[in-house]
Amino acid sequence: MNIHEYQGKSILKSYGVVVPNGKAAFSVEEAVAAAKELGTKVCVVKAQIHAGGRGKAGGVKVAKSIEEVKAYATEILGKTLVTHQTGPAGKVVNRLLIEEGCDIKKEYYLSFVIDRNTARVVMMGSEEGGMDIEAVADTMPEKIIKEYIDPLVGLASFQAKRMAFKMNFAPTVIGQVEKLMGALYRAFMAKDCSLAEINPLVVTNDDKVIALDAKLNFDDSALYRHPDVAELRDESEEDPKEHDAAKEGFSYVTLDGNVACMVNGAGLAMATVDIIKHYGGEPANFLDVGGDSSVEKIAKAFKIMLSDDQVKGIFVNIFGGINKCDVIAGGVVEAAKLVGLTVPVVVRLEGTNVKEGREILRKADVPEVILAESMEKGAQKIIELVAKQNAKLIG
Image: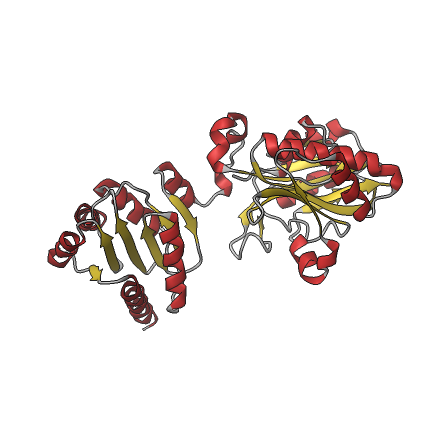
């Protein structure tokens, strides 16, 4: 789960990270009131969306008067920002952060993430802050410094000092940097984060170390331990299909293609996406229905997938274990009738009672549902049918 910058800064501040004073605003009037309350000569008006690159897209403005705050707030609220992380559709700005200005001397990058290869948290830092860290990694990989943290010991003082010196902080601020790194690590661990990122982390002209931006991502599976974090969820920033799927207990990820995938099991879901790509198709989603394949649940999965206008076909790839293939096949047939399919559905079944399941599909009076004897043939068939659908649309 993602949250907004101002929410992330509030959490980090509670752990001792120094952040600028600021206040969220949901209207132009609130933005003006926030700027007056701050009482600083310079205010920054920042769009709050779940995406980076806001400044380049015109979502961050420096205001030197209340009149400019009002003008920028009017300009940004309701605007659709298109950044490298939003995709071409962009995101509509529904809230702002009004923040005191900062006299910046130097910008840095700092984050904590989980490195699955080493099964450890890793602290990453760079003196090339304020820009896309991916670009730094591609063009100047030597500028990315890493410190792997022993889970039994936690972030050691010598690691924070070593990172600070390697990032070329001035000796006069090393103590502040070390303290901030410790605070960021504590927040990361205490809140079950998957990412805690400050970009930029700045040193001001009066030698203060401040988190000028903040991005926190949380492990969805651990949110039950953090109801205070779960309350920060902004559903308007999430894909409606993913939100609806989560309510039904599905694991769902929207992709860019036109072949929808319904499977049971994360491993099979990834293999299905891979095989569609292998045969020249483009998957539209990753949908894992889990162990329950009732008629109602399959129907809901169909409806979620078909709510995507890009979907021109569905590949149902199920391995029956606890759920028997004959039960799954019956569910697919009845759900197809219930939903009223407008696109072809190719079904591949394997596992317990597979013969009975395939026989149900063969006898089904639903022309849109087509049986595939194998995963490979199923992927090839749905790609072929989707190509025909596209040809009809073009024709």
